[in-house]
Amino acid sequence: MITVQNTIDAPIDKVWNFWILPEHIQNWNYPFDEWHTPHAENDLQVNGRFKYKMAAKDKSESFDFEGEYTKVEKFKLIEYKLLDDRTGSVLFENYGDKVKITEVFEPTKNDSESMQKNWCQAVIDNFKKYVENNKEV
Image (tube, rainbow, N blue to C red; front, side, top):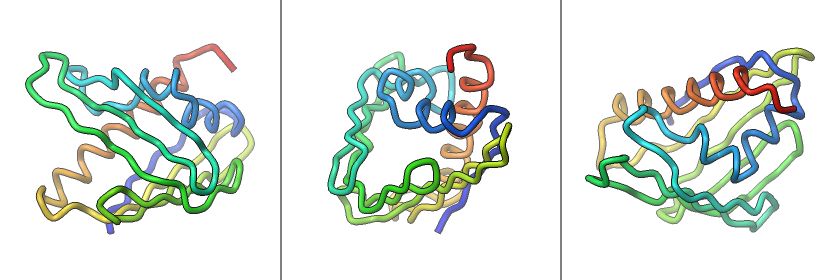
């Protein structure tokens, strides 16, 4: 399993909404400035599906990150299963004016674990920047 985490300086309701709403997902769900998420769908409920298209801005490569939610506890926990049957979870720990996010997931066999960890840590770091720099609640 791979674990990535970060602590966001924002209240839980803002962190939660920015994590789950497609209009926000498209603004942070990429690791590097050369990438973006041109499309995001998210039905956050048990058996609900999600699909995020992640793509290089130069169109040289892209992939869909998609699956189904297996457990949802508002403001606390999201568990999911990807189309290839790998599983993952995102834990939200509320500390009032800060929220610690910890994502744990099974790596693919196709890419090195260190590459996958670095990629996902960069996405979580980008999420932190996006939330903290966005005045919207």
